[in-house]
Amino acid sequence: MKKDIYILGLETSCDETAAAIIKNGREIVSNVVASQIESHKRFGGVVPEIASRHHVEQITLVLEETLKQASMTFEDLNAIAVTKGPGLVGSLLIGVNTAKALAFAHQLPVIGVHHIAGHIYANRLIEEFTFPLLSLVVSGGHTELVLMKEHGKFEVIGETRDDAAGEAYDKVARTLGLPYPGGPHIDRLAHEGEATVDLPRAWLEEGSYDFSFSGLKSAVINTLHNAKQRGIEIQPENLAASFQQSVIEVLTVKTVKAAKEFGVKQVLLAGGVAANKGLRTSLEAAFSETEGVQLIIPPLSLCTDNAAMIGAAGTILYEKGIFEDLAMNGYPSLDIEQG
Amino acid sequence: MKVLAIDTTTYTLGVSLLEGEKLIGEYTTDLNKNHSLRVMPAVEALMKECGVEPAELEKIVVAKGPGSYTGVRIGVTIAKTLAWSLKVPLSGVSSLAVLAASAHFYPSYISPIFDARRGRVYTGLYKYEKGQLVTVKEDRNVLLTDWCHELKELPGEILFVGKDVALHKETIREEMNEQAVCGKEYTSYPRPYELGILGLQAPDEEIHSFVPNYIRLAEAEAKWLEKQADEKRNG
Ligand SMILES: [Zn+2]
Image 1 (cartoon, each protein chain N blue to C red):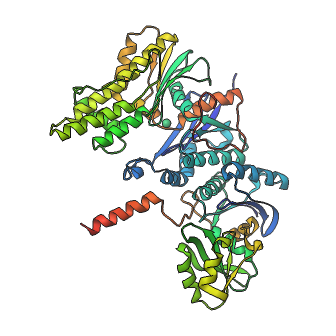
Image 2 (cartoon, each protein chain N blue to C red):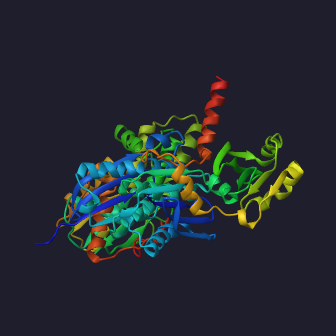
Image 3 (cartoon, rainbow over the protein chains, first blue to last red):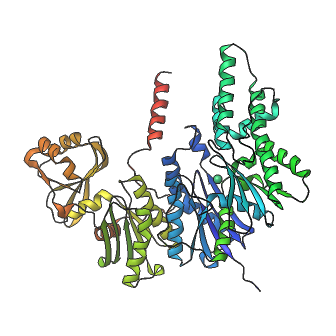
């Protein structure tokens, strides 16, 4: 009989201080997230120095709560997994140094996890992977289509050439005078309005799975500006709906196309923007018509940054015996294909 | 009592291992290299060399700032994590006090200096009384000229210590003349053994809520508070 594997995951790459214990890469034993969002709201975005300070305040509390909820001690763990990048460097360093100190204190191996690999592996906490699979990663910093033919190997087949989808959401939200973080507000407004404003869709050249959202963002800003100059009133609900429709249409069409071309068995949604209702609905509709492809969408709590996903992705590295030493560092930009 | 002391607040990376007030071993470098990468390997190497297991540690001491924000955070994060997970007490010591201790037998006032750019310094005022380092003036971030004016009121010489004194020698001389003594190379580096000794005398901290002493607010927060105050004033 195979022995159970328990991995402690740690995530501090942006503004959530998180820890979790994962059993056999698939089961959440405990999962704790301390969000700093309230503290950053007054600045209209995440302030790196303040994020780092909060991580130091929260880290041991979050760890204690995680062990307590699991009724476990360090002796029950097989390894410590931590996000080593990408992310805000000052924030990453808190998680990385905590993980190294824990690994040293309890003589456990330490595992460095790519943040996006984590987001993808959040899905394995819901459903076992069947390869090949395609993952649509959409967050504040990322918009990527990632193909996987086996565990722990990632192939980026398309990515954004300018803004990430989440970034475009936040900028458009700011233009509409919505509070930070803007994504959920646009999503909410979009459901109250109708897509009456004609906005561009950036398909890029034939056959490309890359994305571009900066043109769309500028179009929204220009539309608002022109209307204001002419004294015409645009319903923000309608503009939000039009913007959201443009983003979602491009994401959905490209994902469906790639899923067919690569003959994938599963399509996973990953990253913070996966919480977007419009995107969920659109993908569900598109894949209900695509035979032989299973669409997996994690619950909201596993879409935003958390450490359960880091524990899940870290388990694969543990099984492969890929460990870091105590000289591990944080890497603000880290390639998922290499890392 | 086996004590592990860690200082990552400046370029000087220091780790020491003490048995009570006795030194077992220490590790010091003064290099412009990545602390985040090097501290834990330094702790591991020193403890291995000294034959001390992590589970044998009975107290953790850390230099809590001021200093480089990132550097201070790395040390404090590691110290908190070690103390919490090994279930041993934690003490924090001013990183300026550690530097002041480099002038251990000096009979008058000691002002440790970290440069804080634009004519400002992190400093405080310390003095050895019956072999104990005492704080005369709390740590602060101050314009060096203002600091010198304040010190001129004191009776007796003031020894300025730290590597960054070299950057401010002329200002100190101009403001204070003969009352100021600028330390030599010997008093330029905080020593991890001194940190351990000061930590033994310091009270235990509440581990979860222990944070660095940055002295300064984050820039964004300072600006935000200023704006709030302005709005209040202007109604
Ligand atoms: Zn994320």
